[in-house]
Image (cartoon, rainbow, N blue to C red; front, side, top):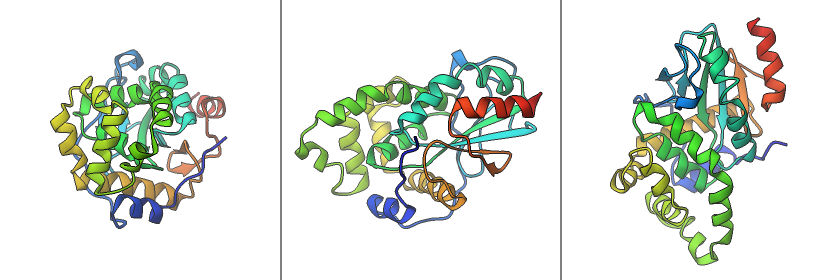
Length: 239
């Protein structure tokens, strides 16, 4: 089952920004060691819209995932595909896999900012870490008081993200990828990065995405939204 999305206008309003054009990206990516299965398995690059590409950027086939960190289906897809997708066609160079953001709420944008502020070789490990621990930090969020969560929705966006990162121990998770507390705070104040993530959300909605994860394959949106549906489609295409 797909989760509903916030429309771009609502997201922009929530974040205190207007919709902006896609900005040039600065490199930041990484393949987690357990998912490297070939010459291309550990290669990372950044697309023109700031998405993170794993594998051969010039691969004959290109898979793009529009995802949300608060989407349980996205966490499930990440857990399922680490080996069969990334050690198979991605590692072999036949397929590139790109992660783009489709942000839905303040928690989502806070994590997206952190994963977009680490060095290139650390994006995918941190991306995986947040999704692997999704159940834990969502459970913590559900136990917080109304007064605590009120800070997430009021004030300037950097302040709100700092409150979320503190309450849910996101600073600790980011520190594991080498991002210090001070660097994380500087990241939250980086408007160029914020606009780039929002632009990816707008792009997904303009494509017609109505839930997460949503995939495009070779530039076209596909009906499949999970590994069970996607795997046979890829197998037939790559044989």
